Image (spheres, rainbow, N blue to C red):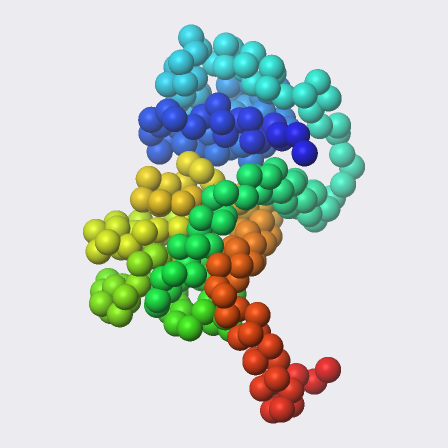
Amino acid sequence: MGESTATRLRQLFEGHRLTPTQRRIAHCLVRRSAEAPFLSSVELAELAGVSQPSVTRFAVALGFDGYPALRRRLREIAPPDARPDASDHNAYQQAVAAEIENLRQLADLLADPGPVRRAGNLLATSRPLPVLGLRAAAAQAYGFAYFAAKVHPDVRLLDEGGSMLPDRLDRAVRAGATTLLCFALPRHPRETVDALEYARGAGLSVVTVADSAFAPVAALSDVLLPAAVGTGLAFDTACAPMLLGRVLLEAMCDALPDAQASLEDFDSRAASRGLFAE
């Protein structure tokens, strides 16, 4: 599978020290990779919610003389037929189409399975395994923790912030935890950033599923796995982060020698209890 425009854009931006505003612009370009090479600086500023001079400074931070030079590079990156055709789809269909594109980007990312396998090994060997997800990311953390508990001997869900969160991290570390799994989705709560800083200070490795490689948690993650969210509806949609969480579960199961036996034991006990209707 060839690299997508979004993947090539991420490679263009990686390795540069970007401000939060500049990371926002980079994230916008990756999210709108199909149209990125055709946006004016004014259009890009409006889409990213920043000022036009910020777009110019972003281009200079990447080593270009200005935005026109950056846009020429973007057009070199994009395939010739990348410009999207006008669509008569309604807003609901457009939201679904955008999520399909997010999943295509995730498939491109997974062409290199190395980071996911590394993450799976880290999760499998952490006993206990704390799983963090606050606010919008709480559902992703809960879903992962629910299934992970069927194969991992000690999964601890951290889906509430407040002053108790560092205490719960401390207890996990004292019990032997070596890795924290974090789901971080926009809008990124300050508490999530603070929790990762605390976790790193406590000696935990951090595996993070985030909406972008430019998310505020990126610098605090030992393994960062990006999966874009959809922004076409009133509330963000997170199909790609959810699927990436399931992929991480698979990688963790691959690294747990007793995973299959645990699943078979659960199925046997569920059948004897009549747990499921089917």
